[in-house]
Image (cartoon, rainbow, N blue to C red):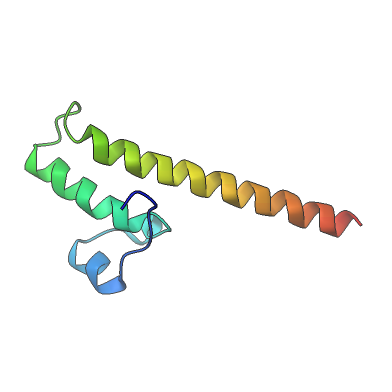
Length: 77
């Protein structure tokens, strides 16, 4: 799941994901949290899952900022 995506609401409720983290990358957060629990939150474990999730978060941020700048340009005209 390199591109991210959203998990279903039932999956998110079952895994007790806070509402604030239920975004475009929530499908990547579930395996990351499972890995973290399995590896006892060791910082050097789960690197691949963490980097994949953080990349998705960054790409989503960039997409939202581009959309915002387009809206500002449209409003200025």
